[in-house]
Length: 146
Image 1 (tube, rainbow, N blue to C red):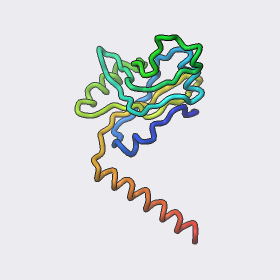
Image 2 (cartoon, rainbow, N blue to C red):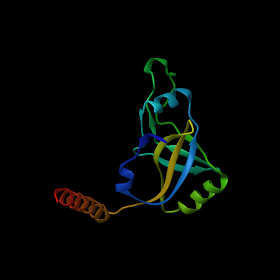
Image 3 (cartoon, helix red, strand yellow):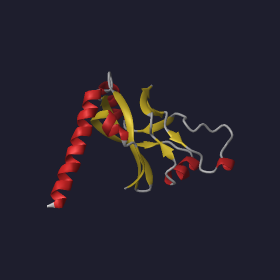
Image 4 (tube, one colour):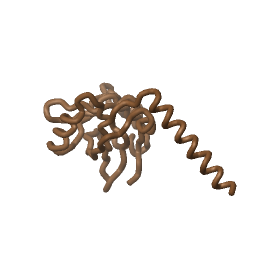
């Protein structure tokens, strides 16, 4: 499982409640671009519309600038391939919450997306996370020096 794109800030900015795995509908040159790790999940979110799930705001840069179609939009809406039950669960659970893509990776030569139902952290929660991380580093350094 080779990770292509990872949204590292998601663990800091959000409290992750549930995770789902989904396929994604892409164009050929988008697949090449993702395999070259040229994309970003910053600011992306999942929207459920008409019984289908779509990722909005995800950036996939063109693989070759000269060979991409002139009407190509790097932040276009991309359809997620999920089971109807999972889409219904996301639609039910996500009332008042956000659904965010966390990472994109290769699984059996297919590109998959990890989508999570998240709750935004408050400023004091983020401070706690930062403080805990720093304390863990200090403990690790102290144990290493022993």
